Image (cartoon, rainbow over all chains, first blue to last red):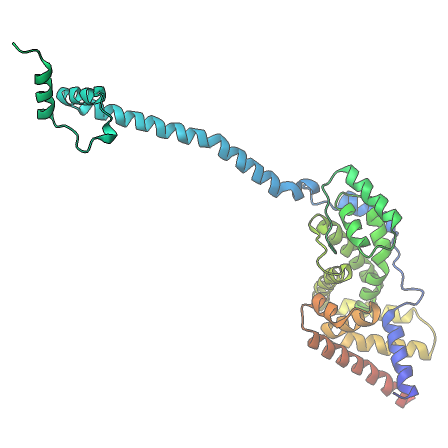
Length: 131
Length: 205
């Protein structure tokens, strides 16, 4: 690079750097800072804006907790209603049979086959005193 | 953990940040701390940040637009954007890269506006030229201004960021959303054009 080119490069760099005396903005730092902070807020509270996702998440969690027990209660009520309707549809004989089964002293879990109604009749006959 | 600023938004944190800053005034992440304070509407932090960056931003706009008033206006708008972005600011890159990305976006908007009113800009340029004195220096300056104005925006911005801010090619590429090789080419072409214009003037004289 000869002297001429060097001089041109220097001149270009000096020009681009714009460091001459008039290259200073007229505004004052403090005045601009004050103006920006006072007049250029978006209108929405800034810290609140930053916290918004967390607040939303928290609210969603609260709502979920508030509604979950209701869902549970609803299920239980339906189950009771269904049980009542089944009980009503049973014949009296079936109800008696069930009551007898519940009253049996034998552990049901150990029995291989449950006794049918004729076996129960026979058992009842054996229990009754001979005439 | 470089470049990550954690704050919880209460006044105790603000005091702690101010204290840490006063103990360590040349901390490389000074701007990150300032940004956290600006997010809490701290006027002193805003003023400090303006003091640190107004000249580089202003000079960038001054050379890009050759219009003092517009350069001042755009510089102020950069800081307004900085303030509005402060609650979401995360220091992922160098602060200057982020700042000049904002500046460049505003510059592109301004150039688009100017294209819609070219006559007005031309008149202002003449006023600027008339206000100055000095023979040959002024002639050089005027030629460089005209040449800089004539080259495409991407070449001019790349060259200014390189010469004024001494940003690396990678940083300039980040600001301009381009590849490093593009940036190198733009800077080379821009320099060549400016050199050519001055060489022509020398040959004539």
